[in-house]
Image (cartoon, rainbow, N blue to C red):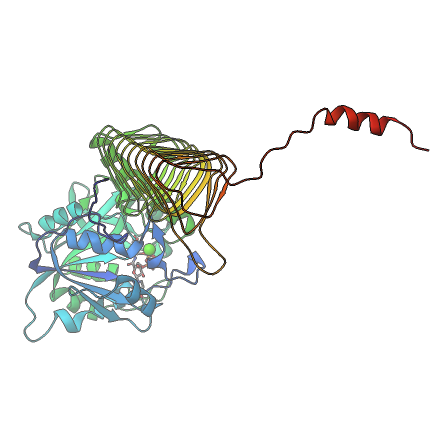
Length: 490
Ligand code: UD1
Ligand code: CA
């Protein structure tokens, strides 16, 4: 039997949550429309590497030990709520009108300010910057809590800073903020600065809310900018430490479809790199799609153009050839998947070979040492150890006993137009080529069916079933026909 691993949902976190620290919370800004995506779907629900952008951010916050997550929702609020689902550690805060990032954060004030609100370190995160890691948030917390610092923010130096906010330092030798200038408000000299604001902050609450109260909308976009609140803090003499992202790709945000493609590729690359570190050979990482929930064992070799999705688990020592598409499936060790096979919610036992061009549909279950060849389709079918279906076959709602051989072109006729019926084949059976197994039907142990038979009655152990017209040979038929057509008729 293939090993059964605990299934996890495809929105399962890629990072295990750290034990929550009551003095840390996250506020995730996710209310914006994302106008430049030109989409009916709220921006933060667009998927990158198989998960919504927002899912990546929440995952990082949980991984950094945030005891509570405040998600600011507005545009498409109901959809965002539904996608995040019910979780004890999440509070949705509505920003009815999207008046800017500063206004978005201010909506959380009733939860973190006033009366008995304890001082907390609030990570303020952008729902559209999915590459942020728990490790970065940990470093940011350290920088914010270091002596002399009041808060901290993540910055990156990008070759193409695009329209991101530009970060000006207090002193060229010191990693402390002077102010952030939004692209729309920047002059040419400021736009030439390549140090950008990643939209990832660690700020003390409730103090930050006092700065937000002082914001105005005197800027190019007529919005309340969170970035201006940091400028006000600095103007008051408080130090905001700049944390340089070791991997500038963590700062990639999504404002356009091109941005989405870039973060998608980058998040995939990150997981593929981790798999390679863990002993998996990936021949062409840039041509390989492995979503974050996918587990792959050491010494498995992944060829180009392979797609591994969802909760797929692949054992050690497997070889996955070009063009395989595998979703929510479990493969045991030493499995060989030949090119262009599709495996969807199926399980494959140790040492099986599948393909090329095979299709394993949901609830196909291969035990050890099973061989599935080209143009074979299996649905809700269990193949016991050592059984084979090598060519051009459909098996649905069936069981095939150990060591049995399914000949070329065999089909289970499992559907009578109204209901599905089962086919059971015993051990060491031989199903002749092109047998139609009209279900419900049973074929016994060591039984044989003649090629081309339509089998609609059970076959007992050790019997041969032949169900086809007996062959009749007509001597010299061809010569006689040729003569008949050659002679002119008058
Ligand atoms: C923002 C920063 C910019 C930074 C960039 C990083 C400001 C003013 N600018 O710009 O310095 O380089 O992020 O990616 O903060 N949102 C709300 N409510 C609003 C407006 C926005 O919840 O009223 C949310 C959006 O859904 C989004 C996030 O805040 O998830 C950032 O907003 P966005 O409009 O994308 O800001 P940027 O222009 O990218
Ligand atoms: Ca953005």
